[in-house]
Length: 89
Picture 1 (cartoon, rainbow, N blue to C red):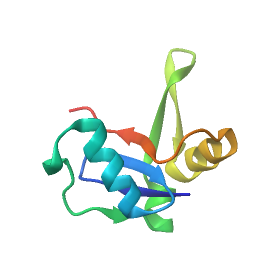
Picture 2: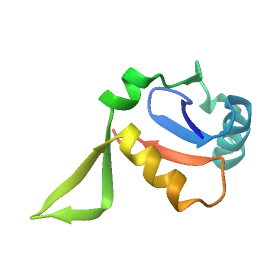
Picture 3: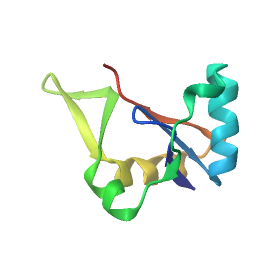
């Protein structure tokens, strides 16, 4: 499994870029939701921050690197491809 940026705000997890693009378009219903899609390299996986909305520690959200979250999602399994993260503006 790999993480792919669909645009500057949405990331998908899946086995291939093509599968993630198709799932993104299907989920959003918008073929224009994908802008310059690309696989995240190791440097980005280690530098981007994932905020776990289900876990809080002393009122502060627990954060992980994308790489750490990727390992968790792979271990949990489930259906792939799927949304991995999104940025709320």
